[in-house]
Image 1: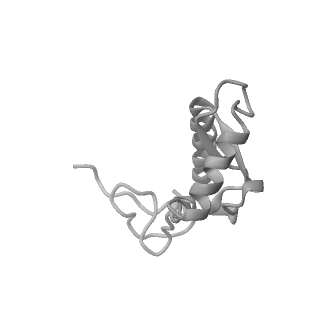
Image 2: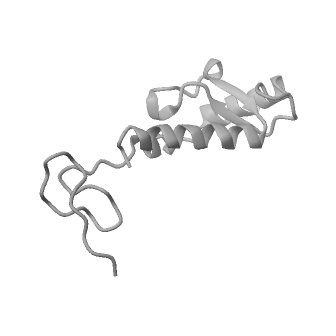
Length: 110
């Protein structure tokens, strides 16, 4: 078992939550994960299907598109409106999702 770590919040002497870097008072889960709520809404499914029909090629690399990406992520206030969706291949969508997750962690929310 690993020894307990002190909270990473500057000046906090409390122990961090096991497996996390901060204590319960300073821990905030990354808000981006909450953005997954609502992906089963009729509006999203309708607009996602329309996006894939209208954009058969990935906007980033030109390969066949297989997934739909929110240009402005839902976690940052983006909507399911067609104007906020774009078609990407799975590889580009995965890379973009990883970049967004990394940016969320770099902001101190993990």
